[in-house]
Image (cartoon, rainbow, N blue to C red; front, top):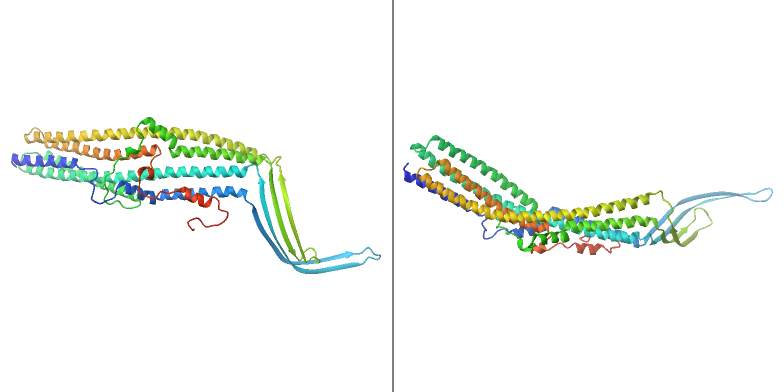
Length: 473
């Protein structure tokens, strides 16, 4: 092979490697899935999120259950059956006369009883407040689940983009290595290089093909995760953009917003309220209870007296019960509730510190991701220049084939790092938004109907009867 031909393959290697480095994270197609539409789909169809919504609806029912303590309890009773009666009486005459009376009848008794609690140590009121706090805590847990679902969806979306781009990088690298090996063998056939050069090229090509297989496996796994989180197969995905515009501008502001608004903190605050109400409910067992009961009963054919064919009774009674000592269980329950309250307060402090740490960590990750973008771009530019230089030096015999392969490998590593940094930059912006409690469809402006937990709550709160759920089940 002539030196001119040698220059040709070296030049082709450099151009191919630089083209490989220039691959973007994702080329935006004319029509394709966007990150925003994927997030909207995940918000609607994510099974974990839908399960948490059902859990909130179940907690809503705690309020009407607590409110039932204000309402009367009414029961209708009916008894009936065959009765047989026999009695013998003795007169006071001398000698005594014995009179036997016997018979049977079909007795029937119907009645209605209504009981209304007037005072129970404020237990009903405190249980209602406790149930309302449970509803609010469940809504905050749902908000946390929404954040997790949206963040997982953003991560899954960007992971697919990253892994597809890396697969393309590895495939292009194999093409360049195949071309390199082909020209190296041609030069070996004319005695310009040794068998060592050929073996080096074969080794790099085998490693490159192995990397392609590994990249294909990773891309398939990312696609499977995408379908699990978002609910559909990833098709043509457009590039994603950071959401820095929705995040706080300073670290101090991020920490303050997180402590004030993060659902982990607000849920812990409501858990403190729940525990506090439980103390009052337990203390209510020491108070007297006052109730009024009305009853009406109609009897036909009294089974105890054959002469009574019909009777009725009506009563209205008030009941006052003053607990004196009930074995000590109520005192233990009060102490237990107070210990639980102390635990919830400690958990609130723990949640604040955890949220603070998460905000600081997310802020640091975002700054690092921003710096990595610049660093990897500089790395790729430097690797491009180095590859050009090594290629020129190889033309005049100052560099070997191994030098060119090493320079190509450096450029490949830089490209991989740049693609990864692009993904990390977008995901880190979503991580910060989640860390401060602002990752929601409303903040992101997603075109999706947001789930309103208040609607179901209002539908069931004052429900007195009925077994069907508001959606007809």
